[in-house]
Length: 286
Image 1 (cartoon, rainbow, N blue to C red):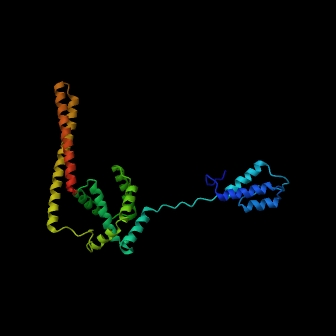
Image 2: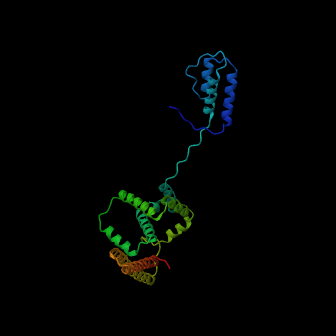
Image 3: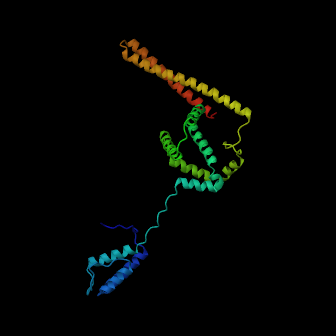
């Protein structure tokens, strides 16, 4: 099997110098077997297996082989490629630099911050508060899972979510890592000012503001549910009129069914867009 080695495209000065010495030695003539072995090993190459006393200048093919081996032996090797730092290790480095060992390893704090980011992620994708509360009740009504398996589930579902939205999760992670490294002082200040013994990252708004916000969200969610019902009704009408269209032979009745389908599709699109607006308002949009 042919052995391979990485060498420079252009010979280095060390390679050329080694060849100069080899050529001078070859042209000197009459090398003995001992001299040949010593010279080859001095260059870090194996001498030919059948070398013997030579009373003449070696043949060109033998000389070429020695010259080639000399250059290969003198070729420098590229520096070892640095292993990329794993994302989890980079996060650990940032946590220690930003918060110190105690906060970085605080399991309760890490639970709360992960849950906060997970909720913000699904909120940005259109999940409503009502849907989130339903899932909270569902999850906490079931037995506690194995953490290793749940981490795997989080990674799988995160990858699937990113695929559905056309996002590269590795690029998103790298971009966020660069962002938080640039905001270490601001994040430390936020950590210092967060309420003690609370899962919340900052002090809640005054009671009156919270009540108004709660009412606003509940009203918007009711509007959203009403719009969803109307949109679903329009979708059912589309299917009904499609069946009627297929069974009509009279041109007039076929035209009437087509008009009804067109009208139902228009209402379906209208309610769909209205739902998007209400959902954005419910998630904090203006």
